[in-house]
Length: 116
Image 1: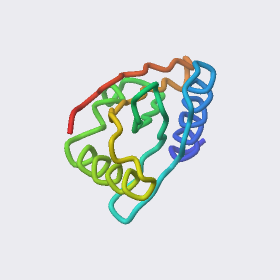
Image 2 (image 1 turned 45 degrees about the vertical axis):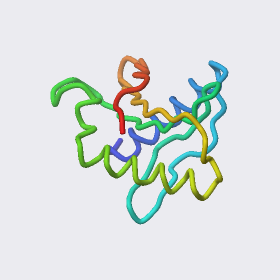
Image 3 (image 1 turned 90 degrees about the horizontal axis):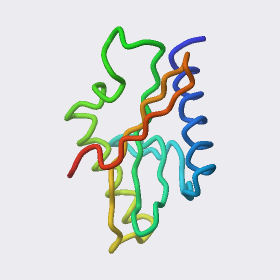
């Protein structure tokens, strides 16, 4: 299985996890010219933009470490686009990261992983 397929399985697992735990998934793989957001969902009064990182091992570090400053900037800019396009002007927003461990089938949900 290649990295794209493993990543896609991780995103599917996170979508299932969110729905199972009562969150409403609003969009997946939202793309603009500036970037992509893996999953967008609501958590009560919050509009949440989620980045999913799936790994087979910790050889290259924790999955969340792959969300560097440049990736964060792209996600924030893409989130702004989503909010304008969908009229989410006065929403509380949050940026979460999901670490998916493919072999052990574990998901770590890091809420409010970074600020804008």
